[in-house]
Image (tube, rainbow, N blue to C red; front, side):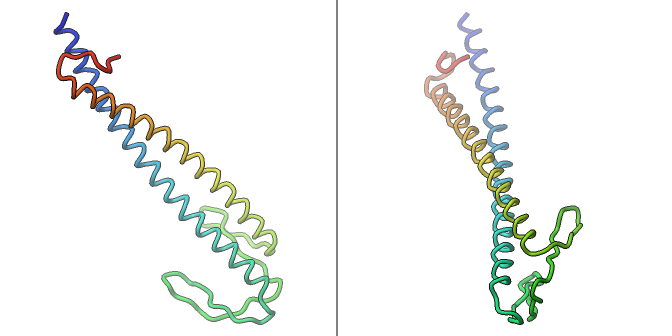
Length: 151
């Protein structure tokens, strides 16, 4: 029976090691998702703040309009000019500035909610990783054939 107990422990250790590796891979994936959400949040917040800044500016005020790649052009925005806003898959729609600002606020709320959900999933995975790591450490300290932390 002692040999059987060692086999079960060795099998359990192998399963735990595979599970630990899978959890770590999942956590890395969630971290990447979180970084994408954070970047998207920054972009949307900057767009909303810029749009509001345009609305507060004097008529005919000159702006530096970003083109991307740290390239700008000087220009002005006509009072009440509509905004072009992306809706996905490369499509843009034209809408008034108030509606565009509202849409950006809604997007920010959805991004914040998604980030909170990802944070919760990361916390759960981190907890599982910690529990599994402690169990594997206990088994390693106990030596082969031990029943510590078994099923």
